[in-house]
Amino acid sequence: MKRLNTFIRSMAVLTALTTFAAGCRKDLLNQVPTGALDAGAFWKTEADATIALQGAYADIRPVFDRDYYYDGMGDFIRTRGTSATAGNLQKGDAYQGATYSPVGSASGQTFDKMYRYLYGGVNRANYVIDNVNRMLLTAAPASVPGLERVVGEARLLRGMLYFRLITLWGDVPYIGHTVFSDAEVSTLSRLPIAQVKDSILADFTYAFEKLPVKATEFGRASKPAALAFRGKLQLFWASWNNYGWPELQGFTASPAAATAAYTAAAEDFKKVINDYGLTLWRNGDPGECDPPGKAEKLPNYYYLFTPIANQGNTEMIMVFTHGGTGTNQGEELMRDVSGRSHEGSQCWVSPRYEIADRYQLISTGDFAPKLVPTDPGVAGARTAPNSAINPQSYAGRDYRMKSSIMWDYEMSIGFNSLKSTGWVPFLYKTWTQPITIDGVVYNPYNTDGTNSGYVLRKFLRNTAGQGRSDGDYAYPVMRLADVFLMYAEATNAVSGPQADAINLLNSIRRRGNLPALSGARTANKEVFFDAIEQERIVELFAEGHRYFDIKRWRKLTAIWGQPNSLGVWMKDTHNGDVQQFYQNTPERAYQQFYIWRIPPGERDRNPNLTQNPAWL
Image 1 (cartoon, one colour):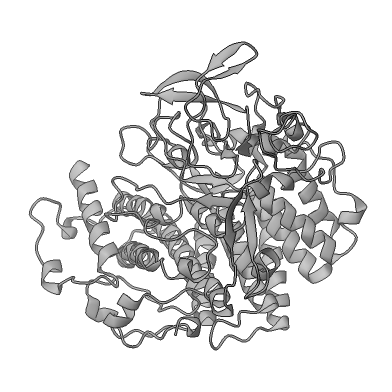
Image 2 (tube, helix red, strand yellow):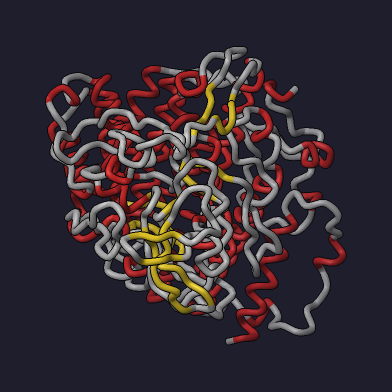
């Protein structure tokens, strides 16, 4: 088995790196391996096909399992860089080297590496599809369903990769077979987005037809996943046709196409919701929530993003699994979201100050008075009403707030050498000085990676035994709450607020212990859309959705102001101006936010690749 896995791993590296890679020579690909099983001895049984598929999952996972970095280009998450993933099958980290910050053109020109890695994933999926399709030509009837299932999963993965490619770059080359040399792709042109979309739709449809209703093996996809992704693709297609995409040359928005796509998306989402017995984590019950300054009782929403939710959790419609300690297949979540007090983590990702005001009051179901950033040197600052550094200003809020972020004097459990070091309180800009709380002296939470006054609790484990890069959390790429919200958006776009959509939003709000939406929030299409956006912000916070929502809804100017304006200062809890974004930013940079550049290196190797006009 070890030699077999070595073969699969070797082929994964080969196929991933040949696509659009510089310097690969065809003669190197024709060498007979001397330390691994020859390909002729493989691709014989369903077990062989399944092993190859598992290799594809592992190979493609690193381009999806830290999508929260994308939110750094939005308005509620700050990234100060990216951590590296050791042991990545693709010999590097797809997320590294990119600028995850709301700085216009500087971001869109830093994702050349991700472009190549996404195509590497396409080639890895094609490698499985091509070989298993050959097996199907001579397979015994009893083996056909299992082999078709493998093809279905590989096509689902391929569809996800192309979906990401068209979302970021618009028209892209389409490669539907395994590539073993540069020559095979050096003359390809970009295919119009509508044609690529249709190919993705075909992949998702095939997957839906061939996958089981429920996968008995943890981490493998099933019918609801394929259906949910098909619906999401149609929702994005509807958004582009509804809101327009002027930066994509040759694309013409169509209101009729938007309506048809919204309708088709809603149908798929409704089936996911109604036909498979899926439920929110712990039935959407809010659970218990300690008051500010305590963390022994955390809401159920917090545990949804810890390894305890890996098994028996139907909310997670599709996940990428991780191996945990000692496997070289662990996740980087704690390393990314927490500080030095948690296994030497690096706090690459933290909340912006502006997210706090989005969490509503349990008592009214509406927004609280805005927090007041306050200098801690001002007398009474820690007790002043609505002061951002008064812990009681955060009391009585949506339970998802306690589950997602930490403010001054919030507690978490520290870790060192895989053992608990006890409670550590967070106090902004106080990393080394001991803190006395209720007569007890604590070493404070060392997290100098934040510049807002908040750090993430979401994804931060509260149990010892795993290093910062050794977690085994199954990262969700599709979950039921998102499907609820997408269904509400699709139906609202066509028919306005619908009773079932309102009920779905209320079920999500219930997990935050919030009351149902008031009539004012569901009175018409416009206010209900605002309610949907609000729930997407807090429910999907730091999961990589906000950036893509801003793009497809074309909300850049609503957030940062018009081109060549003063932009927006981001604040911190101490009333400091942290950073000003989109100040005197030209219109061209706004255009470059909405569509990224085709990597110059790819165009150098292939003169048929045109460039998006915003980058000319």
